[in-house]
Length: 143
Image (cartoon, rainbow, N blue to C red; front, top):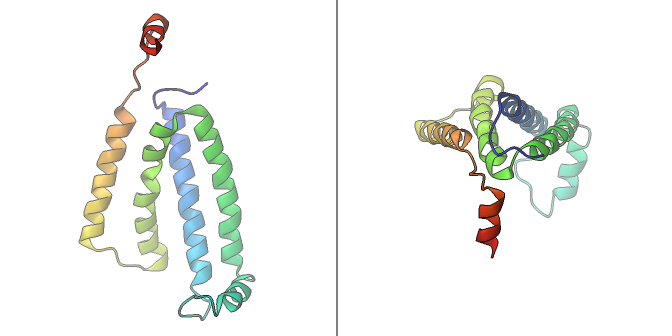
């Protein structure tokens, strides 16, 4: 049965899902950094695929995405999508932090301001509760 609010257990599962998603993104990016191809287009897509087929990081990213998929299925079974998806935006916070640490990317001030907005949005959505109608009231509404 789906819950209309966020319990600590479900919230933790969503955060775990976002951490796994972040790991998958990092592995895939790391795997794609060493292709030796500057751009991908229709003329070199076969070469791009062939060079990346042997990337251990890329395959690890795909496997971690599979784990991510199964965690997300559990989350969706437990809570409404309208709660799970916005709260599941933690990856938008985790990815820049881990990209700085592991990929040495630069994140400018505008992106950090956007991340703060995402944090505020996650907070608002996680605090909301879907109104539950009594059966009689629901039946009247449906007529």
